[in-house]
Length: 359
Ligand SMILES: C[S@@+](CC[C@H](N)C(=O)[O-])C[C@H]1O[C@@H](n2cnc3c(N)ncnc32)[C@H](O)[C@@H]1O
Ligand code: SF4
Image 1: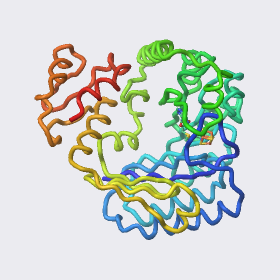
Image 2: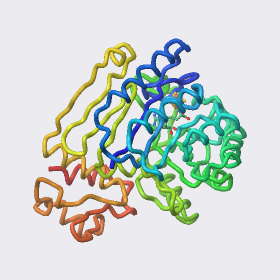
Image 3: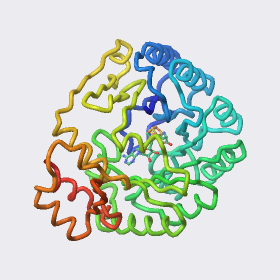
């Protein structure tokens, strides 16, 4: 089984923190892009596998014409063996959806919506360069529910200079979201936010404060029956993201569009060019992973999510690592048969545990 990712690299404007391959481009560029995207999918010779999830991410998929997305989804369904119960997600920005757009997504076959909310604090939304207000975010969730979407997720950012992420989560749960992704704000090179932080214009909370907030948020969500199934992801029963789960458990996936990555589930990774010129020229970067790179990846991804990693799949004997035994004895790691998991209480120190275990 495989997952398919489709990248839609267009946004109405850039948020100050975002380094994703997303650009403000005119209709001509969009038309050419969708033409190439369609061709790329049709020319893919990996069509024998069953597809369990499809994810349209960005950029802002909800910024482009819904017909374009429906057409791409149709091409995928024609070209691949998409399972009847496949999870089909579309990332939406709350300011660029309407009941009409959401109905077109629903009719096209999308069955999961992921809203980029980031914060419900009006001053933070303005500061981040978001184009929506708190009311628009909540309205968008309401429209999606009314359209028939049951599986609705919201993204929040941890580590912002102001705002109250717990009260935001509470409001979003009351509004009806079934899944919350809470990402630590990354200060990415080349973004306006990085300049602001470096010049002292913006002061971010300390790492300790952010970790403390993260822990409080995780506790709050668990109390509200949102199970933590990955470091940044929480879901009510039955609403874990199948697509993300496939990434974290090392399944094969195909990525179409600008900068999209594919993985054959074994040792080969492909990355499309992340600028339009090279993407239109069909340029790709192919990377062959060594057994130890695969091991590193399995450990890193596995320790970030509840499924853990299987020691039988590694190319070395992890029990020979002195830290491994120390972490097992200290109950930082949990061993169930040949599976090793990080005790969720220690998600906040996951990075150092991972480094200590790498071959
Ligand atoms: C690529 S965006 C697409 C969603 C949509 N464009 C939007 O912003 O509403 C997916 C998510 O990545 C997260 N993200 C983007 N930049 C980030 C950063 N610098 N640090 C942490 N998370 C980030 C945001 O939470 C965002 O919702
Ligand atoms: S966060 Fe979303 S809307 Fe903002 S620039 Fe990035 S992709 Fe576009």
